[in-house]
Image 1 (cartoon, rainbow, N blue to C red):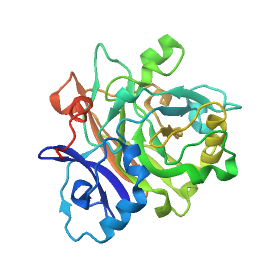
Image 2: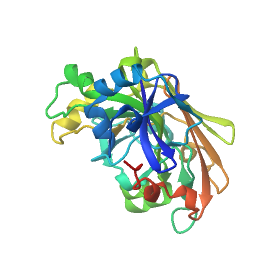
Image 3: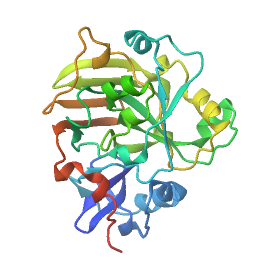
Length: 296
């Protein structure tokens, strides 16, 4: 099943689908949810209701399916070739940083760059892991039981601030710097997450390509490592790292300019596509729009 958040005449609502084209709004199924965690708490009931519901809407405006998560935890340098292209040594333990929740953006919304945000905007296609069950001190062999599903993310990065600050959080947490979607694909639909291929394109030009199996620290290892000290709650997001091919790794380095379009795709999970713009057009401000839920 796919879980999305869609625009409606009254604001927005969560919705579910089997094919990613025809959606059943939660309110039409008799459910209300203010956060992604609310949906995940009743996902089995919602699935059963949707299976019996005949009416669907299509051509929905897709917003970020991750809404009001407790935290976004991201992993840096988690592909060997990406570490090498940035002149970094592949890490001996996960490199963890926070990507603030105010950076969340829609799968097809604009990303704001330019001064004073950044003069060196970069892209990073990543597999997003959505936590479905509370996880504290979880062993790797039990880790997948705590995963609700997966989505595509772009860990947008301000390389100038990253270099100036000597840390990652601020440079990767500007408003709109975390496009995610186009929906959450529930874990039961994925036979082998390790086999999924990640790609990115800039203005139609292929840039990144990798496979989840190439992660230095795989998903169970990350959940064990993180949950040893940080309680993972339903709706939390883990961004697992990016494969090689980012602009910072090119010689000479190439950064995104206003007007550029970045497409991030993970097979089976879908595609997100974002235009990078100079300034703050109203349609990029999903952080404001997403606070207005559908009436009911």
